[in-house]
Length: 269
Length: 306
Image (cartoon, rainbow over all chains, first blue to last red; front, side):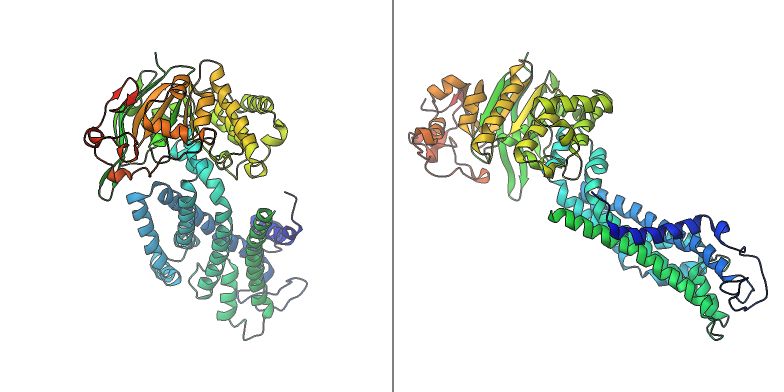
C-alpha cells in the first residue's frame, strides 16, 4: 500500500510530542524546580512568562507533555490488553467463561468513571500511576464487547476450521488467525481510549485531583485557574497547555480516522 | 494393515426432543493409497463421519464406536495428540477453497506456518518448498507468496489450498464436498489434483461427495449412505455396473446422463425416521417386511429384497 499523504501532519505532531516528552531536558530552557520572579509576562528570558511560583511556563509546558502522553498511552495500552484478551477468550470459548467475562464487562460498563476516579484519588492519594490504572482498567469494556462479537462472527468461518484441520491449537488460532482479523477494529479503539484518557487526566487535574508534584497540561490550567492566572489575563499561562491537549487529541484521533478511511478505500477496491 | 479403520461408529447430536442420530453403526476401512468415496444426499451424515475422524464435532456430541488410524484409537487421543495428527497425518479440504484461507494474512505465511508448526523445517526451507509446490501447480510463486487470498481467483485458491495440504505430506486426505458449486473447468482441475493425491500409492483419499460422477472417476470403492446408514458398498466398477440397493439405483437413475429420473419423496428428518428399513417409504419394491424390520448389511447391501 502506498503512503497516504494525509498521515503526514498528525504523524509529525505526534512525533514532536513524543520527542518532547522523551527528552524534555533537551528542549526546556529551565528545570521544573528553577524559580525566578513570579507572574512575569513573556520576555526573552521566559518565552511564556512565569507562574505563581516563578517557574518558567514554557519549560512546564514541555515537561507536561511527558505525563499527559504517558497517562494517555499507558491507559490506552492497558485497556487494549485487557479488552482484547477478554473479548478473544469470551468469543472463542463461549459457555460459562463467556458469561463470566461478559458479566464482568457489564459491571465495569455501568461504573461511572470520573466519580470513581475522584473517590479512588481521595482514598489512594493522587498519583499518576493510580490514574493510569483506573483510566486503563475502566476503559476496556467496549473493546471487549466489540472484539467478542467480531470473534464470534469469524470463529465459525471456514478458514478457522481449515486452520484447526492443519493442526493449529486453540491458542495459536486465537493469536495467529483471529487477532489479525480483529486488529483493524482494535486500532481506532486504542486511539479513542488514549485520547479520552488524556482529556480525563486534564479534567481531573483541573478539579485538583491529580498529583500536585506532577507537571501535566491539565495541572497547568488548574494552577492558572486557582492562582489567578485567569484574573490577571495571563492567557499565555493557560492557553498553550489547552492548545497542546487539543492538538494532541486531534492528532491521535485523526490518525485513527484516516486509518479507518484507508481501510474502507482498500475494501472498496 | 489398513490406514483408517472405522468400527461401528455412531454419532448423535443433542436435540430439543431427544438425541438426533446423525450416523448409525458405520464401519469403514481405507487401505494405504486407496480412494474411498462416501456418497449420499445432504443430511445423510457423510460429513459427520469426516468430522468425527478429525475430532471436530462440537462438545456434547455423543460418539460411540472406534476409529483407528494406523492402529491408534483416535477416540482415545488427547486434544494435543490430535493437533499433531491433524494436518501432519490426516488433512482435510473443504468446499469453497477461497473461504478456507485467512483473508488478512499473506498466502506465503499461510503456506509456511503449518510446515513450521509440524517441524518439517525452518521458515526459510518452508518458503522454498512452498514456492516449489506452487510452481508445480502452475502458479507464479513470487506473486502468490506475497498476495492476499482475496486477490486470487477461486481456481488459484483451490490450488493454494492443495499446496498447503500437500506440503505436510499427510497419509490421509479427507475431501469434504470439494466439488460443490464448481464449473466444469474447475471440476476437471480439481479431479486431477485429487487423483494426484493417491497416485503415489501411499496417501489415501476419503472423498465425501454427493456427486456420483466424481466418485465414479476417482474412487476405488464407493460407500452409499442414506439417513446415517450405509445402504450399499462395493468396488466402484461393480457398484456402478450392477447397483443392488434401490437407493443406489435411484441415485444413478437421477443422473442427467441416465435420464434424470428423481427418487420420489424426500429423505426423512433424522428426528423422525421411519420404522423398519429407512428407505421403505420411497422404495419402489418395499413390502411389509421392509416396514417392520431393519435389514442387515449383507454382502455389501442393506436390503431385504436384494
